[in-house]
Image 1 (cartoon, rainbow, N blue to C red):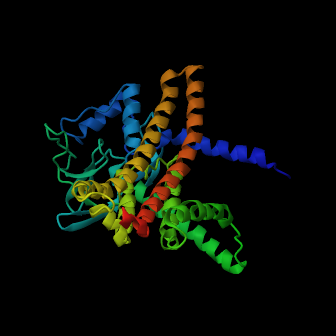
Image 2 (image 1 turned 135 degrees about the horizontal axis):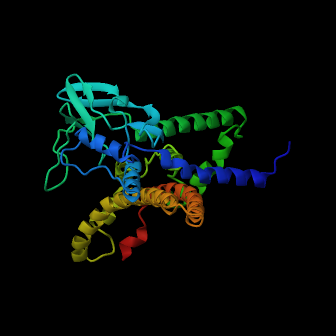
Image 3 (image 1 turned 45 degrees about the horizontal axis):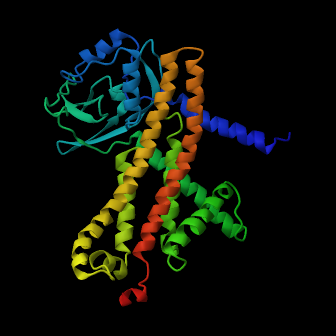
Length: 387
């Protein structure tokens, strides 16, 4: 049977665009109970002393759900029965360091945040507002500071395998498998790619020819190619994972984007040459009094550049999730033959745009990193000394 390329591409694009539309089933904690009795029962368990009651109206439920959706989670919740309040998914390992002891247990003990977990005589509960684990009493009471609103309970050091950690491991393993096979195919076929790696070979060439060489230079770009390729595909895969129904929001997590930007910061400054630091602390071609004024500003720019990398990736991915979930929620609010199809169509179009954003943000992060590396290793221009 012959399948035309254009219809096949359209079907694949439609499938990818529709994936985020079913992500409403992803839930970090059981915060969107349908029955009012169920919400009162959760509140009665004492997870949060004096805390806000679980939302009972539809708009409040949707708002709470979107807020939980963008947070990390200690389990995967795939579906939920609105009648019984039960969720289906699979737990992840919880690893805590508390009272100089290591506590390891399954997140199934939390029952999607509705119950208290006991380990070695200590009790732990998940705070519904931030998704973090706190040490509590047997009733699971979490108290808040009246002025700040933050929990006053002891928070153990959390090394748990969360959804974000699972996505990072999955992206790393996927990259290792794809590019190991791509390298083997080069050696086996005399420099010709074969297998799945052929799909990614154009992207590898693009990063080399359009990002690394123009911004770093042909002499030194090879020193940074391994990092640039790693960061490009790592961010790309995590962005794509965020569009699946699993509800993963790794690159919309400030901790992850900080770590990536910090790596770029370290590589930039540890490999920089004298010319780079000379332009920061004693800028050539500028009057000496002005050099004293400009030096602190230029030094501040060393930290602002990676900070902008961190915020740009985080804000774009985080905002994309919020907007997409909000538009999907309109279908449940309107419940009409006009409003719901319009919301679905808008969500469909935005899903396609989010696929483009996934590639675009990976490109921007990689391109700016290469730009910073190029500035750090740029050779001294002799004509500057004649100014």
